Amino acid sequence: MCFNLVDDNLAVAYKEGLPKDFVDRLDSMGIEIISVSEESIFEHGCNLQAIGDHKAISLKRNSKVNEQLRAHGMEVIELDITEILKAGGGPHCMTFPLERI
Image (cartoon, rainbow, N blue to C red):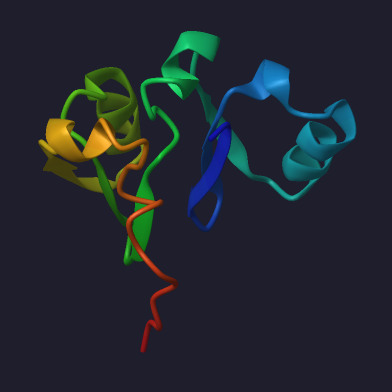
């Protein structure tokens, strides 16, 4: 809920909620973090699904995150799934691991 790797060198995270050594490790690996607020965690702000080739599935209502992803060259496929969110899951929670060929 507070961290998601969405591309080779890009993650979405509530940075303040992560252990410092983990954030330092990401930095040393050249992984940039798009930071979200603590409130965003409960609105599924990090609940994205990376599908490869610089594309991610995200919630339509996460306009700030989606805008930042696009600014980093990502293609964002927005879903309006407000009814599914009521059960506590989002795009990442709704999928099993995908095999990319």
